[in-house]
Length: 487
Image (tube, rainbow, N blue to C red; front, side, top):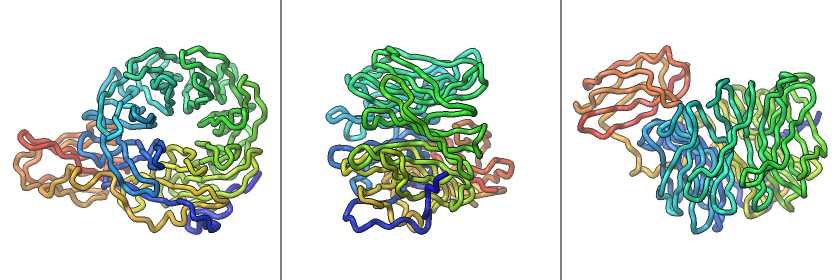
């Protein structure tokens, strides 16, 4: 077993004097805001997607946030309908604009469907569509094709078993579906990653249920953009295995994920290398204290060395209270060099890591309750030096996700206490608000009550988390306010 993190959290590794760009920033506007995907533009700025309740429309909407090379706000916009949308990945092409790939329950056939939105380079929505069946479909990763279409991968429950199946959807430039594939059996299967190998070929990673062993195995398939499958294989010995992300490095696919079961102490790191013909070149399984799962991988420097991003629960040196993010730097031979951590009292979750134009990396994700009491998008820029990590992740200010005059706020509504654990008081001097709806994080309406200037609402029986209070009136614009319930 190797010790992967030597200095964590409050005392972070300090840069070695390189005058390179590195920063850690949080973005929110008193909403439940989640960073999920990011892309870098030609001018070294970044565009981030995810889900947010800081915007006015709907309990949660997909968004795009543009920041410059040092993290300053440039613009933002939100997309979707009256229920829940989430952007999982953002795809970009110059003079074309952006695809937002995620999921929705505002449109479509089932509980959630794949969501694809086309946005121009100025953040204006051009069109949006949904793809799916009668069950739940959720996108986990996506890639741009050579003809400016999209391939989205994830999961579907639209099957006779109601279990998860791998769901692959290929669209053209206009969002029309060219083909779909559903792969799975009696157990849960899903695709978590898609990586482009060349103009027309992609590798997909995830997990699949193997019926004869009653175990989950790491899954990889090599597929052409027309849907032709060249090979499919599973990996792992005794226990359960899965792949979360794949990178093409030095003529081979490097896959990272996790393992549990026989020989493991909870969840442990899993890593393998596969050639373009699907042959296993080698694998590593690390048994560590606590639960530690490799989530993402990218190259840095000369493109043969690696950054990995892990989620960890209760390994030595991390905060209690939920998952923390660990960033590891490895050589191409998977020899650990150094790393740093993103952790606070409540969960911190990474959404994606990308290689940046200076040969380093940028990570997006979300933290919980650092300053705002809800969820804040985090962006961590790593420099290309030996240990160019952000100097501070604790004493940071909140940056706007939404510019102030875009917020659907009103001084005529007051909700207190917030956060709350018992009875809340709702006061308004507007007689036009006739009712208030209580909505959970999935968009489900939990209750609706009439409102006549003042209302007391008992939230003590609700699970801890964030909720939306939706104020509805005949002649007034609908207003959403976030409520945090604590225990």
